[in-house]
Length: 370
Image 1 (tube, rainbow, N blue to C red):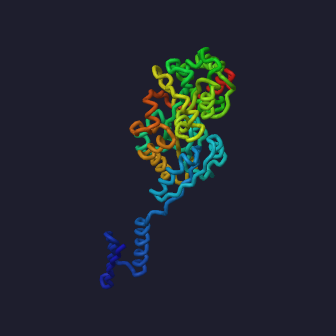
Image 2: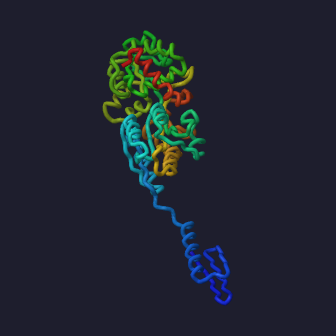
Image 3: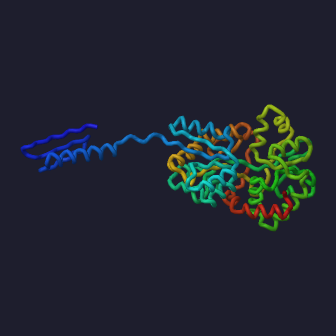
């Protein structure tokens, strides 16, 4: 800062120049002059002060640490913003946010499934992002909240896997077809408490209505090879072991098993992936996504972090590391995803999966899906 002043006693004229700003006054006493000078210096210092040191961001993530921390570390390296990561189950993190309320230290929530993001919206633990052309232009409208409080970051498909030696692809067609009696005792799937299955049923309600969905669920449950148990990897292992012939799973689990170097790879090699409903509405998809919490102490930087997770290299990382599809259609997929071929995805607004979640759970209960 450069300060120049001229004090001319005989004329009682004072001129003060601070940088390129000139102040001139007349008939000032010396005490008034020095008071005016001090006030001006402090004002200019305040207006030209250096930015404050980078804030810390606190992220609650339902994604496992290995699947999100490398991206957060890259963001920190680029921006100087320290990111503190807390991981946990999606429902548990939502409960924690609700309990902590406005006192929550969390700035960002990252979670899986549109159903959970919708629950976060309903609970009021997220705030709208209203000033991000990056997110609204790059992320398709059906994969983000129309309220602007959450945005999809990656896409996963709920697909059918089948035993290569016992099922021909020509035998498969749609989710609806899995209720056909020909599949009696041949289907493995997770329990009805799993939100991925709840969202699948919610999409069926949206497409086919309650009555048709009830009928489909009754036929599907009658075809279970065993009581629902385990996770999606367990369903793939069960098909490989001959306990069932087909299973409904999220696509990225199959991709992860193909990349393993143990018995999981051996099991995955015995099954193949089928894209259901290609001649109809398309394969059911879901998302992982993020939002700025209502309690965020640094909402602008929280928004910037979510924008970072939507940019090109972050989107490619999802595909290459976790076998998920980028939420942005302009980003190429990994070699494993390419090997499965292109598919038609259901373009249902994923918000509907949350809106119809309660109805889906009741329908599953009526059908005896445990």
